[in-house]
Image (cartoon, rainbow, N blue to C red; front, side, top):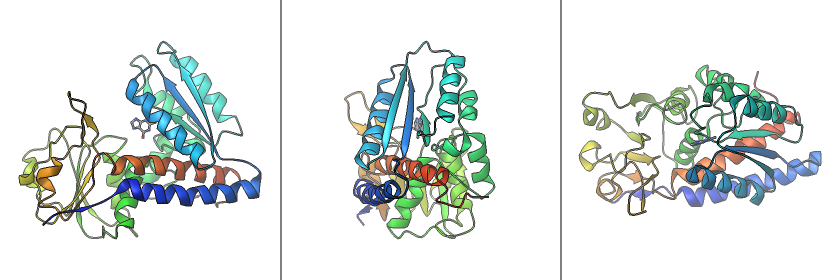
Length: 294
Ligand code: GUN
C-alpha cells in the first residue's frame, strides 16, 4: 500500500480563498478590515519567520496586520502594558503573542491578559476552559487545522481511536479535547501519550489515526503503526544539514499507512489558514455579525 498524501498546502490555499471572499463581505458590510496585531519579543529566528508568514497570509486575504517587535530585554510589565493597549484598540480584532517568550517573562501572565474575545490563538484560560467544557469560542490553530484537514479529506473520526503523541498546551491537549467532543468531526476515543508513557509502540499500534506532535525528528517508525492507519505529522524539525523533517519517518511509514501528511506542506499551512479563520471570526463577533457563543 502507498499512503494517500493529505495535501495541507493545497487545502490551505482553498480555505484562504474562501476566507478572502468572506473578508470582502465583512468589509462591504462594516467598512472595516479584520485586523491582527502580532507581538514578537526578541530575535528568535524561527519565530520571526512564523510571524512574517502569518502577517503575509493576513494581507493576502485583505486583512490588516501590525507587528509590534519588542527587544529581548522587554520587561513583563512593558509587555502587559502593550497587550492592554491592544485589548482596548477597536481596530485590533485579534492579538497574537508569538511563543516562546524570553525566559524572564511569565508566559501565563501574558496569555491571561489577552482579552478573551481577541485571543485568536485560543491559549488563554477562558478559551481553553471553554474548549474543555465543549463550548469553544477560539480553538488553537494547529488542533483546528488537524480536524479540518481530516474533515476535508473525508476521513471519519467518530468512534475511531485517535492516539496523540505529545501533551503540549498548544497542540496535544487541545486536540484531545476537540476530538473528544460530541458531534460532527469528533466523537473519537482519544489516548494522549507523552515522554513518560510506557510501552509506547503498543499504544501507537492501536491507533486508527495517529497524530505525532512531540517534536522528535522521525520518531515514529514503521513498526509503531497499524497497517492502514491515518498518520498526521505535526512536527517540524530542522536537521543539522538543514532539511526539514517531521516527527514521523515518512518514507518508512508511507508504505504501511493509508494516508499521511507531508512535512512541509501538511499541517503547517493549515495552522496559518486557521489563524485567518479565527481572526475573521473575532472581527465578526466584535461587529455583532455572529451570535456570540453563550
Ligand atoms: N509558537 C509555536 N506555535 C505557535 C502558535 O500557534 N501561536 C503562537 N502565538 N506561538 C506559537
